[in-house]
Image (cartoon, helix red, strand yellow):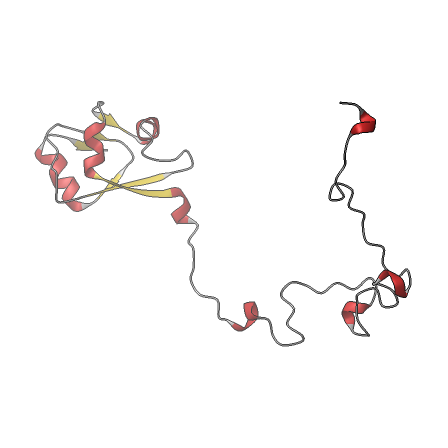
Length: 145
């Protein structure tokens, strides 16, 4: 195969259409912009949400909801997830090492689920607990510090 024997398809050589080059080009005179109006002028851009002077939908519809910044740094963990932790003393560092919470989590609360009860003593350091979890831990000889 030589360079002079290559067949190049017409699709491979697609030229950019030249606007405003006379009637014969198909895009002469107004260059595909139509007559008058904001879109026919040079240097004017219309934003994506522009609706011809009508109030845009993002301003018509009421804004609802609120996302508290506290929720970003707080996490709830169910009691059954503590069964997999081998250590007796549990704090945020240990929960992170077991991938139960993210690195940016600052506050954790352990909540009760009716399925399982603890069977070993656990010592919680700097972690909030619900009332049922508190009773469960104290029954097994654990502490909440």
